[in-house]
Amino acid sequence: MNIAISASILGSDLSNLKNEIQRIESAGADMIHFDVMDGIFVDNISFGIPVLASIKKYTSVTLDVHLMIINPLKYIEQFANAGADIITFHYESSSDINETIDRIHSYGKKAGLSIKPNTPLAGIIKYLHKLDMVLIMTVEPGFGGQGFIKSSLDKISALRSVIDDKGLNVDIQVDGGINDTTASLVRGAGANNLVSGSYLFNAKYTAEAISMLKS
Image (tube, rainbow, N blue to C red):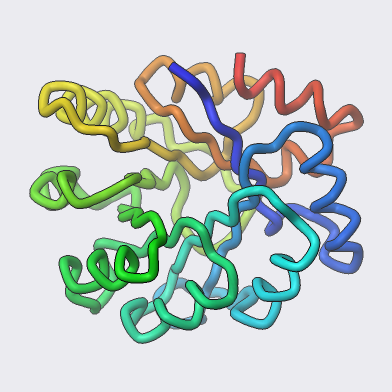
């Protein structure tokens, strides 16, 4: 199973964002993970559409946008036009899930659905055939640098079983507390797309850190 690494700029030096992204790209990151927080859905505020549009100008890697906002449907067009390649929104948001997935696909973008640590897996199963990716949060969303919630491994394993049993081509992404120790746990459980922020951007040797996450 090929493992993709999505580098979360939430863990970068935001005062030097252009250089940080170019550094992580040259080190072998497959994606740039862009967390959008509205201060309502999660208790934090991050960056939005203008920052994404500016990033798009100086990177060629996949832009992996994670919408931690209350009404993602309202903003799909703007994020798609700003350069998002993958748009992931939350099962727990207020937007209609089918309509939001269809809206993302209508702009030629990949659609992901995310669930918080305490949300049961069962609710998202009926949407799998329409999705390109499921993001399982292994921390409570909202802030970087949190500790990994180990009980999430059972959820990852269960989702991998369902995807494989149904013969679907759906990536399993994990986000939260991913480092050289937890990466092997989530890979073993069946995840194939790992989001990492602080671990990657604080690493002395970035290419080695990415290699550790993959292998």
